[in-house]
Picture 1: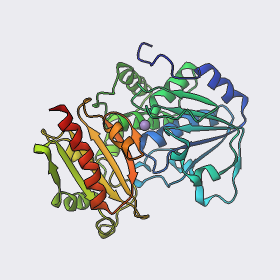
Picture 2: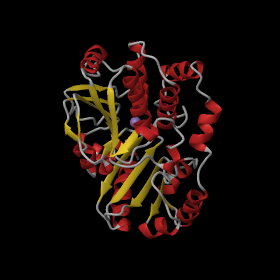
Picture 3: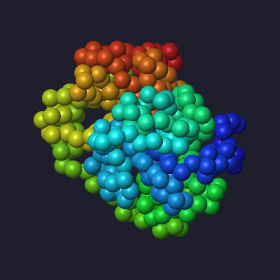
Length: 335
Ligand SMILES: [Mn+2]
């Protein structure tokens, strides 16, 4: 397909051989898993089980409430809750730009990693696997997983089908972001032909939020920070605000889209104070001229041109000033 980079790395054939040669396989993705991370895990995990493999799906963090509707998420074990580590022939790591993104707890869930396969779509991917397949043009890791499954004509269970649809839908903003390719729509069509219920899945993904999420948003909008003639918009979430509404993991997912959707806004940034005092930064750009992946890299983070993140030291007000000044600089460079 013309939609792929010159060299995504090792071939699907060599990855398939490694999979077929293994009996016990670990499947993991990045900590604080999102739709693409979990959907990719379930997609490949289900198929591997059907192939007769013993599959251990593990994550450093629990499945967020918002994604528990997906069949198969109950198979994903929280690393810290395991009584003893698994011994595996093969470890498949999905949607993680670096080995550290998986988190120490998830690494500790495996007594040995066996061979490591790294499948991802982040430009900043560090090729940390024994086998690497990094397709930076793919809008979602779920899309690569689908292509790997299709290339082998492996059968998709309803759970795998829905999980891959969710993976691709969430990483493309429901097939709207510029990273969405023709292949993405063809894959969506295939999944629908296989029985995926788009209306139901989309409702579960985008219209089934708990009320506390909108309470959270109400508070965030009180202190909306708009700069550079409306080109930059930022929201800051402190621990005390999060605790006041009883926030749970996943509640903030997509809140950044609210400020990103303002016409003048080019860069939207969300700052969240974490339990350890670190500040999690999520950033989105609507212009390829402002590369938020590069901006996040200045702070030790990374990601894509139009969507990237970082973790920086607090306090939150200072962190926000440092980051937003860096963003503002990029606009001045364009004048
Ligand atoms: Mn992804």
